[in-house]
Length: 316
Image: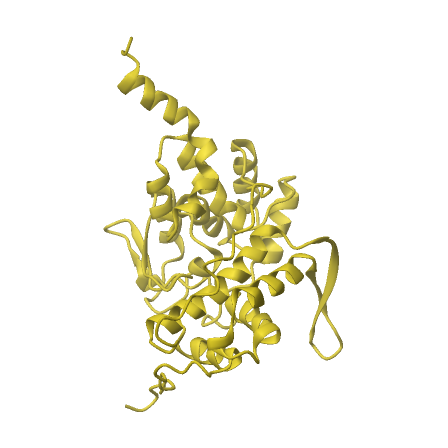
């Protein structure tokens, strides 16, 4: 078939394969949409790329992660004259959550090698004995009711007429930025009040329930099935670069310390505070692991108290 991509074959029990080659093979077969995976695995290539799969030990992983934990985090500071990205170091070291994500990216490659029988028989996964770093210092920022209302009003006044729709969908579906930007009109089912994300960051399809206010706003801009809902004006095949408009709305609403991803957290927090279970929240957000959803558990205390009193309040 013309245009079909031929994937490289998978070797059997190739313990002598260098980690650099294994990473390249993994990425060639990777079907997910995690944009950070390339960068993190690129870092691992530099650390242990010349180590053979069968020789990689938990000591290699431990030493690399210790060095990473003591490394200062960086932020994007624009581009140089040749268009190359410029990164500057922050004063604080990398957050424990970031170090854990690096460990998880390598673990995913090694798990894949075991499942695909690339690793030798009886291979001991070197990441299994690496402890996760505590993430108790992680603060999940979400909008208060007043901040949410101010932001929506500011979005309505934006020079980009679809900013209000984008933010409203993010707040009511918990969808990621990339998932919303990838939506086309053919993904919207007005009769069932839902949108279908063909492939999420995890590589799975996902259905987003749409509230009446979102459906009404969608009707205003409805177009052909292949057109992006949030496409650029000059090139509809590409998503609109809305970040400057979103920053202006935040400034107009007098809101600080917020990114677009905060809207996803805000959706989860509203659900938790109104009685949704962690299982329901995780299902809506598309979490594969309950650990990701537990950050909202403290917000559901009122619901837990009502549940205990309703079912066990008569005892004694």
